[in-house]
Image 1 (cartoon, rainbow, N blue to C red):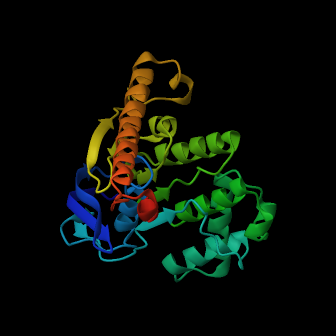
Image 2: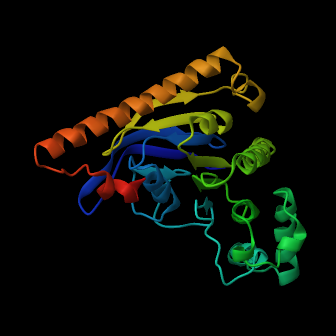
Length: 283
């Protein structure tokens, strides 16, 4: 199990600051959902934790150690699935297992991959199909199965269900939540980027809201085991509804403030450094 410490974490692209002083400590086994408007740096933060971008030593610690690159201790699920199109869906899982379990033979890798295919509710007949022949929901299930099959203690999920229909999204949310809860003493630490307040309320033990870039954490909320929302109470519990409205207001206030600032800059003939299009890569 891995904890994560962000200590005045700062990061920018091309000298343009995206994250400015992010401070938070995540306990091992927590399920953290990141909320915030587009361009605020949610995905950038995930990439830093995953070692896909480089942070300064001591500003970001995973398991007490500075992040110095990608690691098999950190698995990532991307919004665009991240499956190699020239490989079958099953081979996409096996190639990851080959990196971690180098002494396993092909039969062992396939057995492990199939175990997680079943855990994610997939038909084994899909194992030998190519990603282009699968639906979006099936591709995302294979990508999630690959991440869980690696058994990394830290799982990073970058808006993985954003492009799915409502029913498929709900099924995958429940599946991931069940797999995480069943971990008990060895629960994975999960960072999950989403634009949906309802999704964050359903999944998270901790919700972090990032403000406008250059971003800091502007609001946090933590649940206990007793107060953590369930799907059946998500739209009926008055306390959850109040929190939902509060989170929505915080994000909408940020969006309105940013829109007003951009209008003012445009009126003054200065498109400014805060252009939405310049910040798109930092979503």
